[in-house]
Length: 176
Image (cartoon, rainbow, N blue to C red; front, side, top):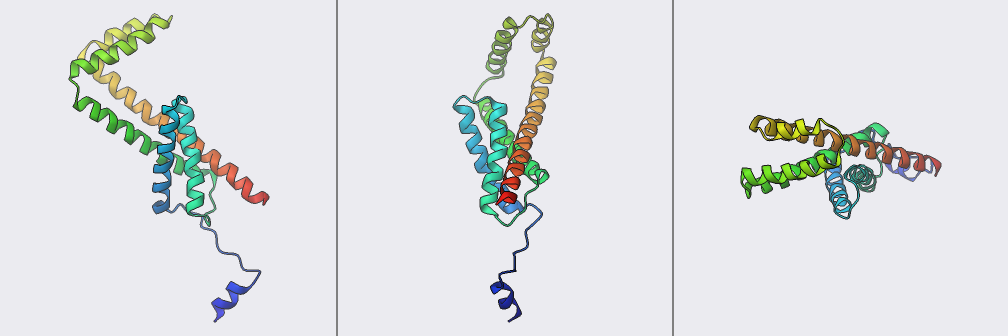
């Protein structure tokens, strides 16, 4: 009976959660990543797409869990999850690509890509990068370094988008 009186009282407000509900966060981040990939495929720069992915993950999470008080830190964690999922999708695509190609085809495709960018660069060290890329150890080193940098970029940009989304929606909620 006491609970009924509290629910009917105009002074009762439900308690807001202050932690992420990971059962709601994972689907929100995954759907946001699909949106970010779509934006990137439409021609948006990858960094901006990942920023948008983090922002959208907060928007979707707030719709799935409206009683959660999202801070910028929680939004950043949600964005980092989105970036991690994005990197996982990219890694899976690269794994499939390498499964159906020979090592020589992959090396040649990446070498041509780097060579095109080196031709536009005035940096004399680009020739050193090309020489390093032509050795087996150098190729492995560059590929691992590129994957690590991509993971870091995905997490940073998505975290920033998530923090921005949480900040914007927190301010919007306070003004209402």
